[in-house]
Image 1 (tube, rainbow, N blue to C red):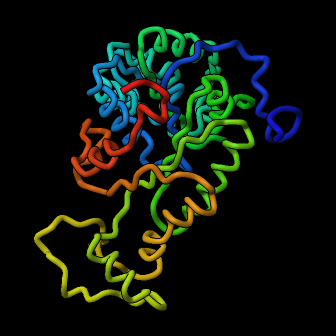
Image 2: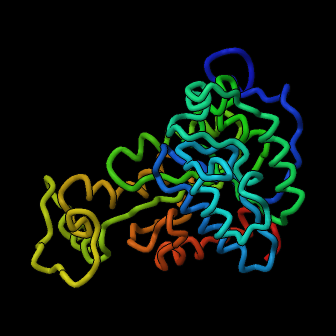
Image 3: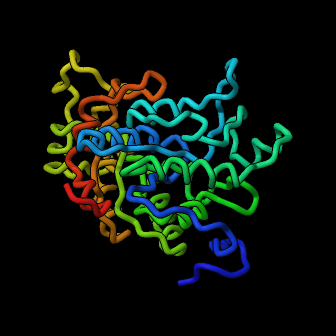
Length: 299
C-alpha cells in the first residue's frame, strides 16, 4: 500500500507536527452536501448521553456568514449545540472563509493565507478538553485545505476511525467506492459507511422486492397516504430506476466495498443544520449503532 512519496496523491504527513491522539471519530463524505455535518452532530448527541464530555472539531469551513464578531460557521454552531460543547466556535473551526469554495481557493480569493498551525493548535486544545472528539472533514477526503495539505492529510494526523457519509441515490456506488479506495490507500481505518437521505418508503421497498420493478415499473401510486409528509415531488414513491437504485445501493456498497453499512438514515423535514435540529427518525437510526465499540471505549 502506497502511503507516501512524490506524486499527485502524496499522503505523507511525516513532516507535520505530531498531534495528540484521542478517542473519537473522523466523519467525512463522498462529496459536499451529503449531510456529514448532520450525521456528525447526531453521533455527538448520541455519545453525549453517555455522560462523557464530547467535543467537536472541523478544521476549516467556507460559506460562512459575517457578523460583528467575524466570520461564523453554521456547521460549527450546529456541532457545538449537538455536543453541548464548552469550546469557542473559533476553537471548533479555526479557519473560516466567506466564499463557498474549497478552503485553498477561498483563501486565495480573499487574499489570505491558510494557517495550518492554527488548525493544529486548536485541535490540540479541543482534544485536551474532551473524553471523545468528533471531527468533521471539509468536503471529501481529497478536498484541499491548502494546496499541499488536504483533508486526507489531517485525517492521517488525527488517526481516528473514519465514518463515510454517502448519499442514497443513483451514482453513490462509484463515489463511495472511490472514497473507500482513497481512505485505504492513505492507510486510514474505515469504520463503515452511513447512507444518508434515504427516500424510499418501507411499503414501497416491499413492492419493489416482490415486483422487481422491471424496466423502472412504478408501484401503484393509489396506495399513497397524502396526509403523510413526503420528499420533493412526492419522493417516498418510486419514480423509476433512480429510486430502485436507492433500494439496491446499500447492499452494493457493502459487498463491492467490503465495508459495513452502519446505518441508513432517512430524509426528513426535522433535519436542519441552520435551525440546530435533528429529526427523530434520523437520531433513532444513528442511535442504533454501537459507537462505543467502533471508537474503542467502554460503555
